[in-house]
Image (cartoon, rainbow over all chains, first blue to last red):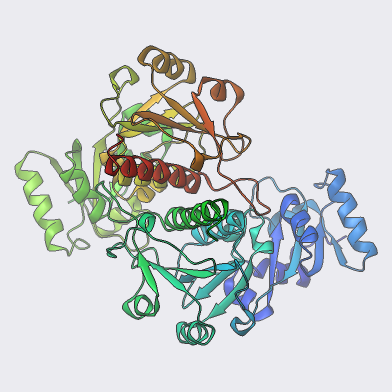
Length: 270
Length: 270
């Protein structure tokens, strides 16, 4: 059992809180029973499991540890105090996992029948990113394409907000030029959202395969991004605000398109 | 100029970060130029303005200070260091306001033609509450009714997420029994949301006047709340998640109802 928080393995895992360390190592640390169970069930590539026998009282948690140990996953048994130095919550459940990040190169994305993705340009808030992954999972979206300086989906806040969608959503990172070139080459239908667009999102038809492009919380989409879109829609607002929360706006658009496609299917038009 | 962070007035304002202090005093502290401008334009009851001449470089900010001073509002001039002890951000703009909370008793709510509200039961996350106020403002909703142990709308995170809607949305706090009695007496149409409801929110018609009731992030609506509803709807989910982020779900429902009512108006059915 590791009883020193200065243990080099523990220090290395603790460093995964920092984005730089996550980027360099290609790893992330997920903590809590629910998320570790989801990582296993979604076949994430688990490098090590960390657990504290004093904290991990759950039967399914202990079974998961022994199952994974039999499968050859490295198990780090640590003291309660050491576990707490890794934990972000006050009352940790005593289980965590070091997992390999899963990124897909944009060239690998091929929009098959009914496939759609969300692309995010320079999104700053990890809570928004996580909520968007969660919503996109709920409507059957394939994944999220992160453009420019978009925040890290493996940030603990983003992971938590994704409620497990971090493992089911495919993830792509690209700069805007590469994304635009991919879009042109594959003739992807790109839908942008902008408060200034004259086209009301509700009075529009959408193709079955598409990418929905959303801009940053503060600035929305820049001109060059809007110019790449096949269609730019706006969500009407009748109050004093001139914008919506980004995750809320993305959810409203995704569900509108989802409903339109389902209505069309039922009417036999799709 | 106040140069000591131990100054009793400054200590009192700093204490407004705590919910208990906000409840006891009936006051809250809003920081930043944009939010103070909005407080003034929405005619919030400002008790004092705090500013640091070293930090407040904005012309409109300085004009606001002198205008409000002429109107008799107390102005507290403080040093940069003292201001920073009040600020929640690293790079403060040098202006803040102590403002009276504005609560409406539930008996005062009367649903006139086209009026609608959001009611939240035991909502825990102030970021969600703020985003819901922001969305409700955007669709023209009157305000938010906070039931049970719902978080404080004057929490700094909630205020920031509301993007100014904290001043335009009416706020009511009540326990569930009082709310249910009000609903019955006024014959308010209550729409609840629950993942388990068989009724798809998109295949439903909604009356022009309504209250949309949403449950907590972790538990949703309890049985007694669902039993009070005239209609309970669900948002379909085809992925692996079994719920949506609360602010996202509320936004999807509010905009669906908004669109349905606008479509009906255009078709002359409302």
